[in-house]
Length: 287
Image (tube, rainbow, N blue to C red; front, side):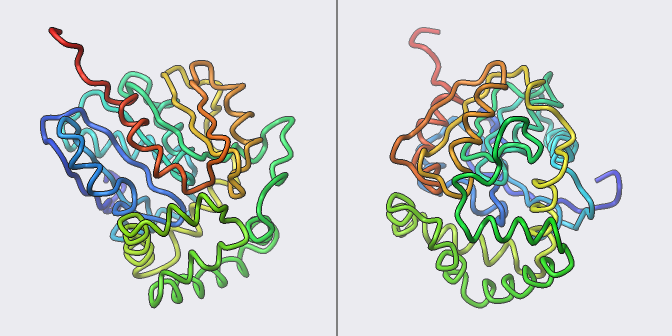
């Protein structure tokens, strides 16, 4: 990168296909975005994912805002020779996908935003309403005692490196029946566990910086997004409650809101085939 940081990325699929830049969850990394079998089922798509600063093999960028994702994605696209592309973000990666749509309007064709939180200063929204108690406690600690929060994350990351299944177990108060079913699917569960271990392989800095960025001024206004946005959410999500979805849907001008009434947080992984159909529609017959 221009500031000397290294940014780790990976790509799969058709090198001549429609480019889709994937923005992973929190915590997470480039290996936890799209299941391998879904990549194989989309022969006309070029999937590109990167580790946000501080995760996996990417250097840390202390104090980063959500908006920085647009600069990093633009630099990555330039290096790969991409003109226009789509972006897809899930959970903690969803606001970063919105940042790309807001700040790179000439390059982002469409954006898919799955299970996204709303900005912390969202006017008229009770940000914590409907959120799992453990998540409320974690965010409150990050806001009130960031040093203690950082120490706790470092300890959790060490446990995850040794046994990533412990992370899913620690989320149990926020997992719906739908979520438990999703993470019990072998291919999806293995992808998530491998991703957690790799993303937190050397430190918890990415997780820390992600959380602080999501809880701070994002550096852009979702209402300024002019590109088409597919806004997907599970109504039973206890990590990003449905009120966040409703707030974003009411403010993003070209949002196409899709609410799964029985879906949870990880149900976004099951929605990916339909989401990709919208992001990369198949050519019409004869055209």
